[in-house]
Length: 105
Image 1 (cartoon, rainbow, N blue to C red):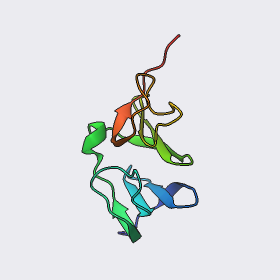
Image 2 (tube, rainbow, N blue to C red; image 1 turned 180 degrees about the vertical axis):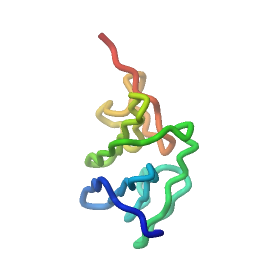
Image 3 (cartoon, rainbow, N blue to C red; image 1 turned 45 degrees about the vertical axis):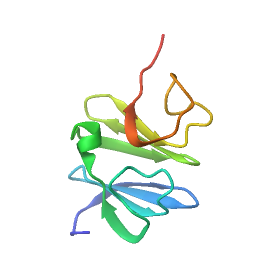
């Protein structure tokens, strides 16, 4: 990882994510349900943000087996294990490609 200032770190017992000041997202750890394009790694792997249309990420959160990001545009994207419906309200299918979260009133 180039010398960049980390502004947020989130992780769980198998993986961690680091968000930098420039809006780049890095992944370390297990590759179970990580965003497509990264592999299991002890070193930081830059996550390809094309899956969220290259939107600027401003916040990250790792759940037990899923990850969510908030973009500067106010959208929430999530990926990982969806056995409890935390990623999509349409199905319980798990995803390695971020799904844009839709909120219902």
